[in-house]
Image 1 (tube, rainbow, N blue to C red):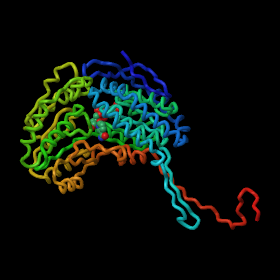
Image 2 (image 1 turned 180 degrees about the vertical axis):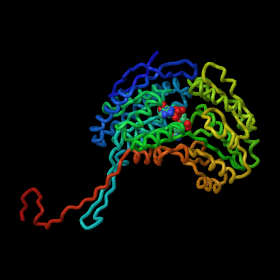
Image 3 (image 1 turned 60 degrees about the horizontal axis):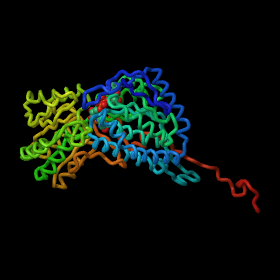
Image 4 (image 1 turned 120 degrees about the horizontal axis):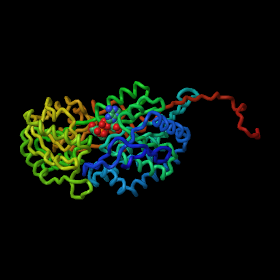
Length: 492
Ligand code: NAD
């Protein structure tokens, strides 16, 4: 059985594996992941600290060259990287390419580092006094990532962290760790010095060692809410800068008068794409007024045409979920929904009898607060319909939800859309856009239980998170002209 290596000092380092990696389309174990002991974690942190000494002093042009070359290598290797993602995650190849494209955007943003790292200057703030500011790297960054975007989320973090002069230790999800090794190798090929980017494989115990390690300065985490809270509390208690992005329950409001065909297309794509394993997936469609029955009929027409199969089959609309345990958990939400008075309009759980970790599309009508399938993040191909009487009830439902990652409204009414964007307590809002992931020139982040810490990830807030500000106030004594030593004889 192959053991997935670590990537330290520019080399693959193999240790005996423990934690299984599956091919979710077949249910077979494809490899194992090593879980490092404290001594090995220490070695990796030491190598990142040593590499920091020269990397933080590297010129901006040298860093820019490396990032431009890395960007091209990602493009050249996109097919190979997408295949690695599909093999271990299960998503379709088209989705894997989409994830790489969104990751690539962050490398492109980081290529503008000379602009992003520019400080400010104020002349003559007092007599003979000038002030300038600059941003220095935070140090060694631990990047801890979830299974559902094994290339994009590492690129969200690493591109800006490296551009800002930090060294990075990536702890990828133990479910789909292989693509992270290729990212490391492509960075070396692009000219990144050894030790600046490492991949430390492992599981929760590895994360817990990083959270308290004195050699780690900052932690970027993306994953589920309970773990995000734990990472934030433990990391900050150990004097680290932490941003910890958590889970989600994203609502899509459909107002009377909206184009129901457009809304149904959006709900099905955003609800079932990547088997619902996206933190920006729509999990609740909020049907306002009397449109629910018409909307459900259009959604079911589309659901009935979806094809679920291996991610490597170009005909598949979505692939399997990540593990057998996760599949069984998803199925249990659908099976128990009628106990809460919820109607199961489409039930895809019969696919769970296949050897791969498949669940077909499920549609639940009547989800509401206090029911398990509404309250929990299911993270699978299960779309709920919530019926509310009016716009105010829709906003109240969203604002009472403990998560605040993304939300969307479908309407033809510009005034309602404008009010909605102001009135919801959510970080990312789509107006007739179901998955409003910001482009890389903006930052990504939710509110409430979807983010612990104040810094959103990537974009300008990413650069701020990975740097510390310095402000320098300067006054030079002002000698009389005759006392100025110009360093060479003058004619006077
Ligand atoms: P997870 O929280 O189980 O794991 C994330 C990382 O934390 C992994 O590297 C894992 O090894 C580690 N980990 C797991 N349990 C831990 C523990 N008890 N202590 C310390 N470390 C631990 O998340 P996942 O299942 O890999 O990913 C899915 C979750 O991530 C969903 O909740 C999804 O909404 C969320 N997510 C959020 C965003 C966002 O931007 N807000 C993006 C992607 C995914």
